[in-house]
Amino acid sequence: MNLNKKQIQHLKGLAHSLKPVVLLGSNGLTEAVVAEIDFALNHHELIKVKIPTDDRENKALIVDAICRETQATKVQVIGKTLVLYRESEEKKIHIPKL
Image (tube, rainbow, N blue to C red):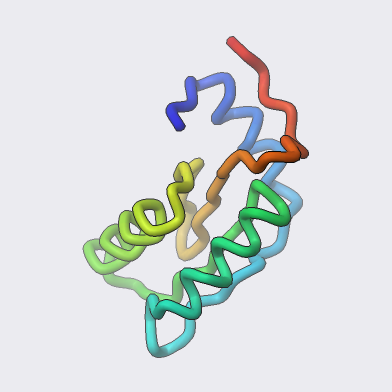
């Protein structure tokens, strides 16, 4: 899903008060972690994921893999926190059109 700047800003505002729902452990990105992220996206639509690595290249690879595996849209990455959005069938979050 492609989001424009206004939609991304809206989602950033909604995500500001959220706490990370999924925390990657020392094993990194496993199938179980991807399944948990997928479940959380189905339930919440907008989530934060904590990625405990200081290596920018490694973090970028993990973010790309998460987005690819879950078909979610990256809203933003701040430090070690990734904000993801994926629309569910129930459409819990209203996103402005333009």
